[in-house]
Image (cartoon, rainbow, N blue to C red; front, side, top):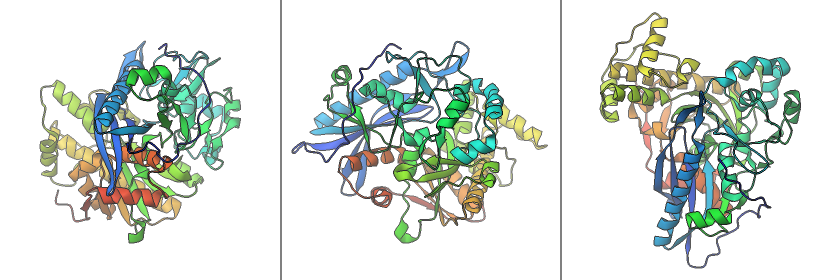
Length: 501
């Protein structure tokens, strides 16, 4: 916890690559709640080619009675990945023109004036912020919070986490991707798409809602200044450059550092085919389900439906609801493995698909499912509370999860259409869930819309494309970036049908 980067001024944004005949590649550091990767991205004639050079696990650990991230281990893996990226690029006669970082949202580390991380960052899965919700709402009416931030109420939003802190004197809060960038460059910045998830960000102005800081007794400079996707955060510190074997002038570039912002930037929508009215599902540990808009929707109806307005790349608004996701299945698999049952996922899904439709469902958004525990039994208990029954059978439990997620997706998309007055023509599923054929087909059936599945690596693609545009390797807006995704990836299409599953 004693890494203390030096301070300095950030350089200007990257221009076109000028490294002679050496071609440029871009390193994407893409970290989720359960795993992370460092990926090299190459802009080619038919889109973007990705090469994973390092994978590593991630997860919460119990420290001092709380659920936290082992950030020292996480950062060590990032450095290993950047070292591997530099080695692979050098073998290919390439140079790394930029590094972009995306992670999950809302969590942060506290850094002192010397640049030291004071403790491992808490995980949003820790229950500490629950008690802070009511005191925050006594100071800031929930309706006022929503009309300013447009943020979905979740008990682990950053605003409630900060309200549970005991002493913030002399400390600065850095969201997880910004903390990684700080340790690489010495520059303290807050990337805007992630800032918009804190509950302290004005959705219309695109700036910090400083009156909320004052109301909660927080310093207005608690977070570093904002930076937009495509702007350069800084270059590598000398000691970091030496450690990973990269030039010191290697730029760290702000991307959509909230991983969903990067994923949505790479949704392969084709505006010229009438697909500008698309819904997206970023399907992974969580499911982020919604629409891309030009302006936030800050209505009381939106608050009642618990929709969020988060910033996307190029000033767009990700109007979405944060839903439960494949965490439910992965936690079940973990429990089954502990019990000695380790089915391959394709076999498990095939067995679930063979079961008849119309089985019991759960509410995948229930906070009851947030913390790690015996997930199969918790799902069965939730079904019992509805007056139904679910056998203690992995296939039946898996089918319950898939049916519940698909039904939840359909409800959320219907609500988004109504609240934003926007008709949806097609549903794009990106991320790990796009490989789940059962979930994609059930989603098509439940929504009555065509589902386009892929790419799996949407988050890394969005990360790389924003970097490449900043470096002048590609140009245009989101439509042009998405055209590169369409060109470079095979996408699967699922038509709605009377479910035979």
